[in-house]
Length: 426
Ligand SMILES: C[S@@+](CC[C@H](N)C(=O)[O-])C[C@H]1O[C@@H](n2cnc3c(N)ncnc32)[C@H](O)[C@@H]1O
Image 1 (cartoon, helix red, strand yellow):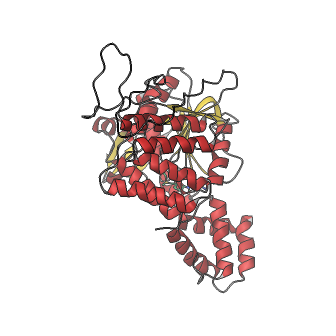
Image 2 (image 1 turned 90 degrees about the vertical axis):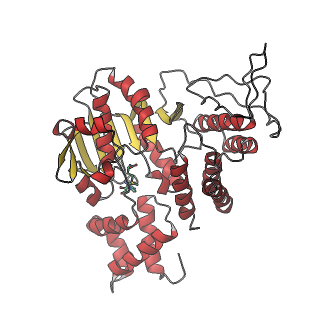
Image 3 (image 1 turned 180 degrees about the horizontal axis):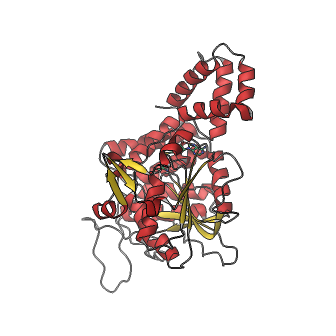
């Protein structure tokens, strides 16, 4: 924060940031400082801070916290990830035939809750299935409870889904009562414990927390993921946005990657741990097409197929090797790095994997973004900012290579900008 901000206001801002787990951008700090100055008025700063920390200051604290919150959301936000969630997670769970328990943590104005209710209905989940929506912001929750949405928030909802599960009233669309009755809402700060249960001590099948942790400090992210894992049934699924991958080794969750998305699964101590993903050999020279002598085993769940490339050589007759261009190899490696990270890989090896992927495919903006994230989490803020900037330059120049299972380039662009703001650079 600039030196113009008086120390007492700075102390109030630091407390609000800590209570929300937020890594405040410069703009958020400035907004918060203005709001804190107003709220403080002529009062005694120390007394004000003590009141914020105590129960009677809850309303003032909530107001200050709402100044730094970002509530942007949409129905069916990130269709690619939701499609994978529907087909690979919810459909399988629905087959079990019991009521399912889902939680949208940081649900903002309720669009994600409605989306999950629709997806559950579409896969034929038990009608007793429920979705809990929680958020720190009371104002967002008040809107969420209505489960009624403006046309703008509905733009990604496929027409048949809209017709089936929403009713139009004036300019707004209301979720049909049959589904709306399966939602429950609760105000909850993800920095506070205890965390909610699904129902009287019941754990969740799926927890969705997207586009919330991207604003959090690395320490807060680690803590929140651990607390989510404790509220998941063994084998239950945690859904984070693709912009918020887990890059530190953890024992409580494992990565489950599909062709178009990746999720985290609460480790089930009764089941043997899945084999560690294969590691690549030293990077070949990037100038020549790569024909690894012993390509690691691939499976559709582990690795997207290489896209056709005009420079890719055809198969050599009599050989059973998969011909890969350096770019394909870089993409494949990038996918594996994500798997390793949550499978207990040390940070240094994850970093080496990302750097290898970038050596092979320098225009893989998603890998550059992840490298930035890893460096940021290690405290190397200037180096992290440089990687985010390089990713942005690739995206702005239209040279960024897409990645099948990660963010699309538009969302990656937004993630890089948020990351630079978080570091105070923009
Ligand atoms: C950008 S919205 C994401 C909404 C939705 N999950 C989505 O992806 O569309 C982020 C939400 O997280 C909430 N939030 C921020 N910090 C929080 C915290 N510490 N505890 C709970 N919710 C928080 C904000 O109030 C906001 O509504």
